[in-house]
Length: 302
Image 1 (cartoon, rainbow, N blue to C red):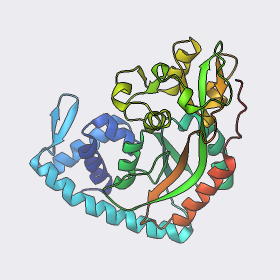
Image 2: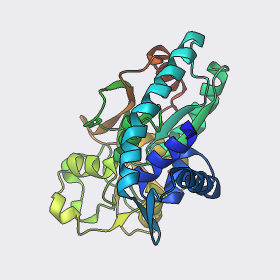
Image 3: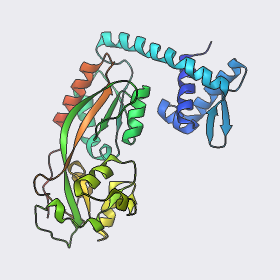
Image 4: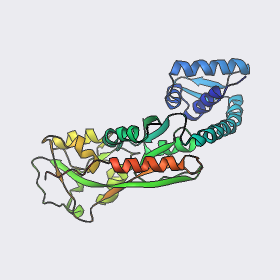
């Protein structure tokens, strides 16, 4: 008999096209996932996936298997949710995805609060960019996504609940002293350092400062806010930072933080889940916990 676990692994492998990424999404080791796929192929008497170097692709039989397995997995998940809903919360860990410009700054505050206020639940946390989180949400790979932009989905309908506004501040070298608060239209756009493509915070910075998107594509692009802060500290540019990042990124006297002149700029953090869930009330409680546990605003040093 083909097991639900093997179906899940096969569907995830088809979606990711990579054994390592599929194993990460399924929260198992790569050897364990590979073994289950091999056993599944032995039971089928034929290969379900073509191995193409570091990537994989479903064979014709594999595509048909995945297409038939998906609705079975959805029904199994719905049945599990029905039984879990009778107990008031999921029986398995609640899978929470968080974007990189939020995870290192907010999780240290909210995770202890989630564990304290929801003792009957356990949490599994992963980090990825917005598009990947929304895809994982619509695929059922995660239950909740903590993002900072309006979710776009071509799949199941999503519920988005606002958490709180996260103000932007200007970070400069310690030797720079623009007048506080700083008008957005007086920021030197030619020195602005940005995250690389795919980060919603990059797009929000471009919009806030009125940068030319095409010109911004030719500037330095970093993979993390921490990298950008190092460049700013060395006098190699300026940047906008979200306020929740200041507790970690603005420690010591490496950079100077300046408030923006009203109306300034901000992003709204949101918690998103699939509309068709029996755990909507639980997810609303999780959102309320996050709001209460949000870090206090940090003073500027400009």
